[in-house]
Length: 175
Length: 338
Ligand code: SF4
Ligand code: SF4
Ligand code: SF4
Image 1 (cartoon, rainbow over the protein chains, first blue to last red):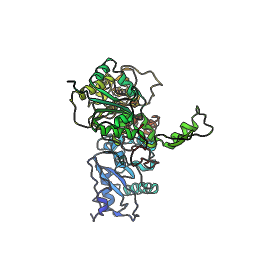
Image 2: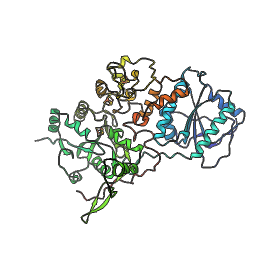
Image 3: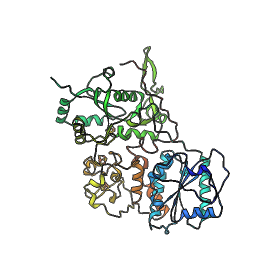
Image 4: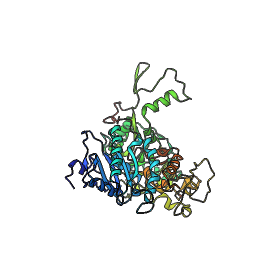
């Protein structure tokens, strides 16, 4: 495990739901410009976290704007958590779980899969492009796949640029 | 010696008038309320001027009930004035509480609203293309209208709010119990929603018919089928917002054989009602593959309007992204006291 750039240890805005990003992999960080976007990536404990670890072990490339959050199951990443991610400063949100049929909790990734298209449609109504939210499957051994999915998604989000949510705190208010 | 009655104000912002109607619906009980308090402002029913309020001492009004969302600088100005003059401010109804139906306008823009309302609507004849202006001249006299903001806000995004009475509109029984609690000083901690803490499904009469593993294969909109009046709406494939809506309304829609649309806002612990509903409802879809999940999602005609019907401004996203915040730095109205 190599030294981790400080920029990767903490997201720009703190995530409020009691989740903390973890980053101790041996990835080679890709050269990116300073205006880079942030890709919040939820990885399930049983498969995709292992996949990220394998990618690190293979010293595969990863964009420094990726923030990893380990969760017990992709099914646990409910829609509120994804919106909280966008609200907290993510420009894209990627949910990675076990391949269908391989879920540690049998059905969790199916639940995540059912949620995704409905949420994506709602996000579009709020002006959040489809490319900014994605769900995919990565098993523990699939380091290459992890790197491919993350880099492809990152590039799509980078092409769209930063997501500018309107600040809800009203200036001049008494709060 | 005559004891001075507490002063009370009712005000409406971006409102449909339904909340005012609820107050009127208190029927005979309103006479008791009117007996116990001194109403200093109630534009819908009584004639008072803003300068009467401006003349009051700070904190002189015991309670101000404000309904409606905030969209114009007049609404912002008066709610700020009432905040200054009142001991308690109560956000009354879902528009003031979470943004309500007017808050759906945050999914579009001011420009699109003006285009539809003043140019494109088939019932509008506007050959000269007239659009309301903030400043204009009428017979040589300057006229100033309130500024229409880019976005709709909840009351507490603009001023400090002490309590919330949910509902679109709040049912009279709930209003009466809240008003009684306020008059008797039996209030919970500041910031509370004055309604039960349970979710609607917990108190719903159809609750027992909701099975452990409901599977929805086809979504029906309420007008498309005649719902069985005994069975849980979700079991019948009709979207019901009960799982992520606060109880306290007396299940009026359910008892009228209509599904809940979520007007009581989120129950405690839920930040974003729409997102929670997306999670809750999608988990019931009978879909094993990605394609099946997409097909089920397609059947929900308007996800944001269905799940965030009353909560767009207070949701985590707040409004559609295509625009920058266009809220003026302060809501002062440069108008002489009317
Ligand atoms: S909460 Fe409902 S009844 Fe009250 S003003 Fe808003 S839309 Fe009308
Ligand atoms: S989903 Fe609707 S009908 Fe079913 S139990 Fe909940 S509130 Fe009642
Ligand atoms: S059933 Fe739902 S929509 Fe109907 S009044 Fe109650 S909370 Fe509001």
